[in-house]
Length: 337
Image (cartoon, rainbow, N blue to C red; front, side, top):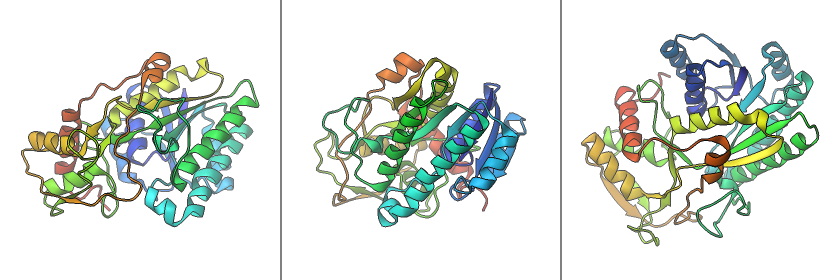
């Protein structure tokens, strides 16, 4: 099967590319490299011994996208390409709708042109918004509270109508919770630009001496230790979720959604303690006031993915911390710029 990965140079895309090659899939990657690094894909090629097409394309450029899509002629698309910062989406929502929504429309247009009928979409748990109950299951109301989440839900809705308009079409949206970790080899991992928005790379940078301390926003939540609780999933487990969806996409008609999470909540202090144990480093931290809009807790009900995709998480929190620290030690400044 020929698989086109959009946004394949990014954090999740590069890990998925590596595991797809390990499973003997024929892949091609397109990316505009606004968030991803060409170095991540070069390392995937070197590690796997497999050379694959890497094309510098922006999915908002319909003409270039159509030209190269025709040359690739994939059987299925795994669609990661898009902007991903919640805070930036609040500051510049039009940018997010243009890239995430219009870009996805372009992709579906060229898929129609080439009669490519299968797509796996990188969605997000942000589509749910404030929890009415926990854990979130796929039947939970969708009411995103920021433009990033709105853009993800808009694309899901587009996929639903696109799939229903032709019996041959099938689309799967994977609603991620909190991806963390790195490939166990330390060759690829998360490489944030500037100050990390996510917890794990920030902790790693404090451990390596690049930052003085971790700021923990809120220690009075109704959780086990007062700090925020999230559902963290190793990026390699996440990559395998895409492979499980790919194996079964022909069994589904229309549009289907699946939560991709561990099914358990982990607090900030629990991650901190695990990281200190694994790394042998003391992580300085300071409590700050809660941030507006932050939720006390959320985690997934992953039962549907287990039942229909045969997928579940296999990698423990300690292994997440081990792999994150291994990546940080080997690449203290991320990929070469």
